Image (cartoon, rainbow, N blue to C red; front, side, top):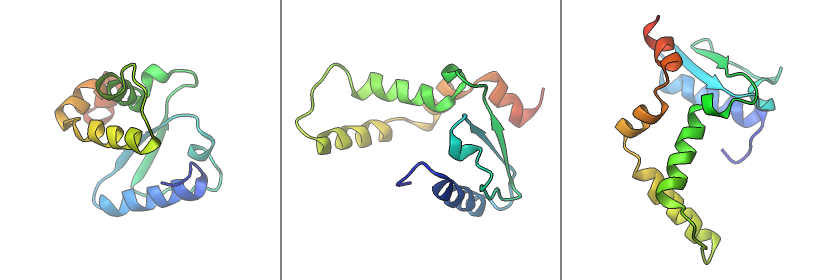
Length: 116
């Protein structure tokens, strides 16, 4: 999405809902203002839940960013922003689904899908 705001969040939620119309989608959010806006239009098949504030270790995306930095962005200077974007794209594409599941599969997330 081009911006981090309520309008883009609503577009994202609508598209996510349309992609999984027969499923209930559990979406973990942090405390960003656009995740809690009163203007959000949350589709019926999406349930939002929130991690506590100031707990980046609980946010699954933080673990993904850590892996991206480890794999593609060691102590290096890039000659241009385009080169940074190219490296980012290559690094993201190298993350296999199994690895993503492994590094983000926290017990509290897995329990949300399978129950206690």
